[in-house]
Amino acid sequence: MRELPKLFGDRSEDLATRFLEQEGYIVIERNYFARKLGEIDIIAQKEDTLHFIEVKSGKADFDPVYNLTPAKMRKIINSAHYYLKSKAIDLPYCIDALIIRGDEVEFIENVTL
Image (cartoon, rainbow, N blue to C red; front, top):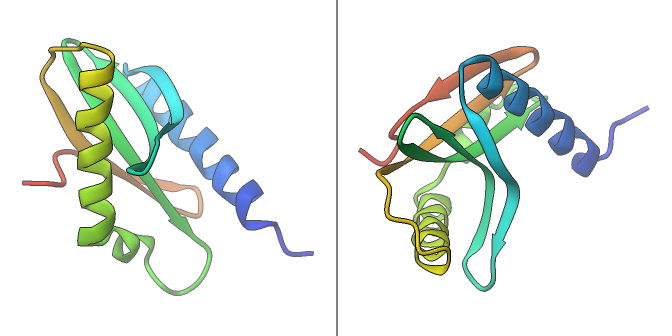
């Protein structure tokens, strides 16, 4: 039986959250939605830096890293700026990607560089 895309995405984000917590990150929010801008999968903090993390996963032969498009990056960046402004947060931050291939996790920091 095929797994529903939403369920598959939730499981991937659960795996990503566990990975981040094991690496010393504190998960602040999941699935933060900025109206008209987009969604941030995970917002986490490590030391004094906020991390806005996009989780990409896939089951097909197509590598999920290729779903991290310039348009998607713009949405994440705009949503991150909105989050910081709306919460009046003044901390260093970065945009990261967490790529899940099966049970393997690849964490890419500062994907906007």
